[in-house]
Length: 175
Image (cartoon, rainbow, N blue to C red; front, side):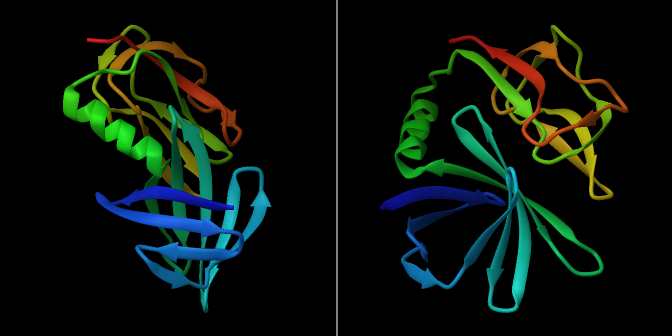
């Protein structure tokens, strides 16, 4: 069954189509192998290159942290949405309509909370850094998916966290 996604990496959007084992990126077929490693983690292979991807759903979007190997691994953040959801999100942005309700910031992988960067009740903008999680000897700064007020902090500095665990809850209100 064909599924189409909008994938944004470093501000650049690509359209990815998945049709069973077939992967098409911006209209070009690619030979990419996806292997589930653990809950929320995938190994991606293309030729002799490979990367680990840690997946976390946040507020209708999927956050992906991609770790490219080698002696000095690089972590790249990506945002994935179904193509239809991406079109709706763009309409919402263009018309200045805010989405109401809570949105959780979740740990993309197992790790340890290094620093909590916000306080309950604090108002923040979309993309504001809220917590730092260390995983695989790398610190990952996690950001709020939308503007709002910090409703709840569900973690503590120094605490171990699991992949997909809610860390911070942001309450958004329309207007």
